[in-house]
Image (cartoon, rainbow, N blue to C red; front, side, top):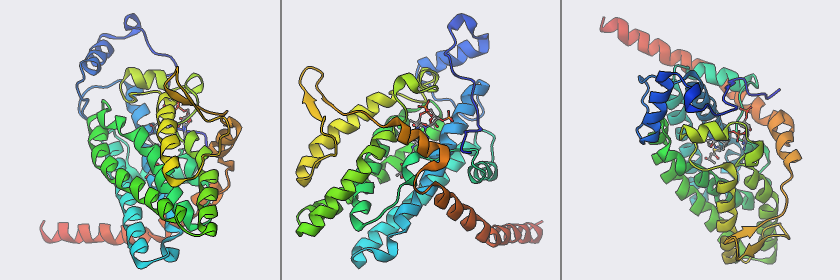
Length: 327
Ligand code: 3HC
């Protein structure tokens, strides 16, 4: 149902002798570190890869509002409510910059949204998990936004100009989100026994889904090699995942909590933390539409879009009225 329909044919990286002259010149620009801009020539697969990735990313920001929006009315204080409201609004803004960046590639926002709503485009697996307690809002900020930043800071140097520029502001806001999440957990970790239990429980439930956010292992990632050659991706899924695990394994100590991985251990030789096996069957189950909240998330998005139809119609009528008045 959720099979990605913006298909790319970039399973294998072309050798220079297999490229056309135009493709070689394009790759040379990438290799020199030049940015590719919307009106520049680009291979069709580069364009489609970007539409797929930026579109998925935009959808993730928009759907990503839902698990947290669920807690706006239940935040434990006025201040927490105001902070959460601002954060959820930031996510909406990120979605809008990203849809705009995707539109520079010749696809409309309406087409992208239609593909999301019909299950033909993906959004991040992580947003198919429920937020059961207030501590989940802390865990989402610390772990989910933390994983998002780890993946997105390198995207500020992606080869496609509009995407890389959109990412600069997004990353600044995401780093604030990550800190507010950690601070929620820090307060809970110093609270009552029940609050500490709630904090540990949220970490236990959000840890492995956050680790999976980076995508399949490198050998199972069909798009990585080509996306790295085109400098859309700067680091592999596994490299970024390892960095995330290394950072969190230290940060969790400040909370006096533990990550739910008995095999997590510092490896002096590798200068990284070793970790236990990842349950990839869970990941594929979620991205194939069978996670705990997939159906609910999509249904809420479709409903919001349908109920907002009058706003879009009113905005268009207003533009038309102004056009006629000044014609
Ligand atoms: N959730 C859903 N699908 C995923 C996924 C995930 N966590 N990770 C990988 N996939 C999908 C890919 O889309 C691809 O699907 P397809 O073949 O049907 O098109 C397939 O799994 C194979 O994965 P690859 O590693 O080959 O795919 P990519 O090269 O595209 O790498 C990625 C995946 C690392 C997620 C990359 O697309 C990326 O960096 N995207 C931009 C960042 C992004 O979208 N982040 C989402 C979270 S945004 C967020 O968290 C918002 C914040 O405010 C909280």
